[in-house]
Length: 293
Image (tube, rainbow, N blue to C red; front, side):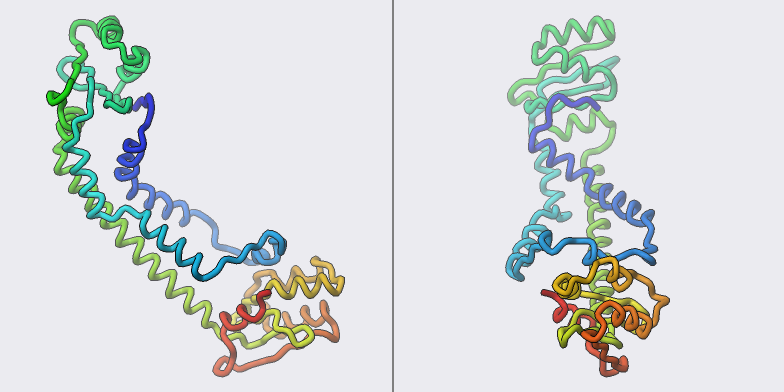
């Protein structure tokens, strides 16, 4: 396709038709990415404190509402498709041997199957010039159709001439695809929330403290979770970050006692480790809350 300019309406229609494909491509891309994080440090260790901005719960809720409103639901999309189909906004078209090869709407948006769209761009709104260009390029089998006022075809009629497909069938297929994508997104979101709850509720069988302040914990699977407070306390004590990096490294093969040894080596007499059984241990979410600044 060739594009002269894209109006906001044109961009919106493009979004409607490609939404399901975007969701699919994002999912495929995510699948290709490696999930092996062993040996890497978590983001808390890599981000400087001055780069962290906290926002309130109210602000988070506002963002969530904005994102929800920005999603185009299937029923809204169907209404938009049908309304757009009844709009009369095509101003001219180029046919070659009776087949519509390119057209332009009143916003200047050009749709083309071949180089005919380039001719529309070259003519820059001059119909007589466009007729000359089309005649030179394609000969007697080509013509320029000009549509005015109430004689303009609807977008649905142009779509059917251009694609050879039923507009109603196209809309039905798009809505089915969008509904499927919406349902899939909800399933994935639900799975994410379930995983997050399980992750947050994981018992911390060892809790790490410096001078009585909780700075992190570790679960029975060896996932150590250190808070920003640990880095700030270390900075105050003149402890280099290089000594702390192993504490922020992801390595499920390490036992809580091994991590505790690293922690004690870094903080010496100021270090304290409290052990729990899984049944009476605090959760990861509780430790995270206390280990934040």
